[in-house]
Length: 371
Image 1 (cartoon, helix red, strand yellow):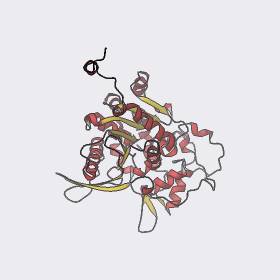
Image 2 (cartoon, one colour):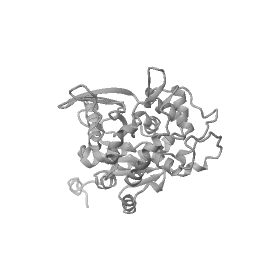
Image 3 (tube, one colour):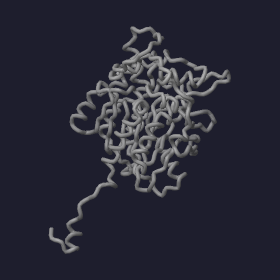
C-alpha cells in the first residue's frame, strides 16, 4: 500500500526522535538507499512548491461514472485521455492506499509524450475519490482486494460505454503499491480475457509489504493530522521526503486532502481505519503475480524489496524487473520520466498488434512462390 515502505523504514529508524530537526542537505547520495525516504530535508527556495496545478494539465477528461447494483449504487471518479485509434492500447492506472489518480499525473503526461497513440485511464478507488452506497444510503467502504479489483473493471467498462467504444481496446494494467495488488488480482481473476496485454506493479511485493504492516500504525501516528494550507501540505511532503519531486507534489498532494469547516486541510482517506484489510491486500500477491496470464513488469525502488518467491521467479525469467535506486516509494512521482520510459518500452515490446509475422506457407504457395 502507499507509504508501506516508508512505514517500515520509520520503524527501523526508531532511534531518531519522532520529529527530527530540519536541516539543509546538499548531498543527496543517501537517496540510493531504500530507507532514505524517511530523511527530513528543508527545501531550498528553488525547490519550494509553486501554486497547485489542475488535473487538466495531465488528462483530457474527468468523468463521474454511475452504476446501480443489487446492493446499492456507485459513483466512480476517473481521469481519461482516450487512445488515438481503436488499435492503440489503453493503460489503466491504479493508485496506492491513501493516494489518488493524480499520483500518476506527471508519469501519464510523460507516457503520452513517448507514446502519443496510447490512452490513459487513471481510476480512483472507493474511499479515495469514488464512493459506493448501500441501499440504506450509507457509504460502503468495503476495501477487500476482490472488491477493489472488480471496481476497477467496472470503471473500465463504464468508461467504454460512456465513450461509445464498440469493444475494449488492448489493456495494460498498472498499479502502484496497493494498486499493484489490485491489478495483480484483476489479472489473476481473468476479468479481461485476451484483451489483457500485461500488467505492471510499482514498488510493492508481498514479503516486504507484509513485514511493513507490523509498523504501519506507528508510522501513521507520526504524520500531521491537519495542515493550515495546501502549500503547507505540499511542503511537508517534500520536506519529509515522502515525495522527492516538487512538481509532482503540486499535482498530487491537493487531491489527498479536504478542507474542514475551520479552514484547515485534513486527509481525505483515513488509512488507520483500513487496517482490517491490509493482510487481505497483500497476502498471496507474489503467487498471483507469477501465475496470472499476461506479460509482467515489476518496478522497484530497491532490490531489497524482492521476496524469496519473486527472486526465484525473476531468476527463471518469469517477469521483467527494473530498479530505480534514486527513487522513493512513490517512484512514478519521483522519477516520472524514467517510470514512463520503462512502461512504454514494456508495452511496445509486448504489443501483439505491432508484430510483423512471416507469411504463411499456404499463402506463398497460392502466390506461386517456392518454399
